[in-house]
Figure 1: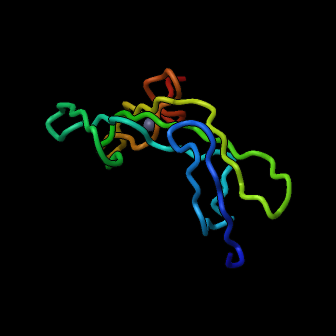
Figure 2 (figure 1 turned 30 degrees about the vertical axis):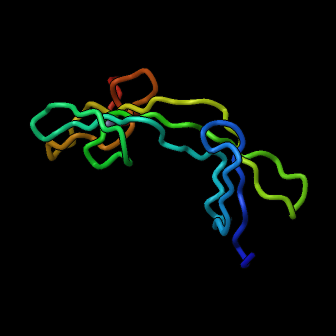
Length: 120
Ligand SMILES: [Zn+2]
C-alpha cells in the first residue's frame, strides 16, 4: 500500500462487505455518505422529476443518503471500518441567491432553508 493510502471496509447498510483500497488517508472523514435510491430533480420550468438512477446534478432538490461512521481501529494494520448508522433525507434550501438562482446548500433537517437563509 503506497504511503498516505489505506483500505476502508464498510459494515451494514447497502455497502456491507464493500472494501475500498488505496483511499487517501486525508479523505477519512468521521462520516461518509452514500447516496441511495431515487432522487428528485427540479427542471428549469419548475416541474419536478423523479430520477431512479445516477447521482444528483446541479438541479437536485431531494435525495437520501446512508450514513457510515468511522470506527476506532484496533491496530495500524487493520483497515478502517465504517459502520452504517442510518439514513438521512436531504432537501435543498428553498431560498434564492442575489443572482436569482436557487441556493445550492442543503436545508437544515426539517427546515425549508439552509443555516445561512434561516429566518431569524
Ligand atoms: Zn440557502
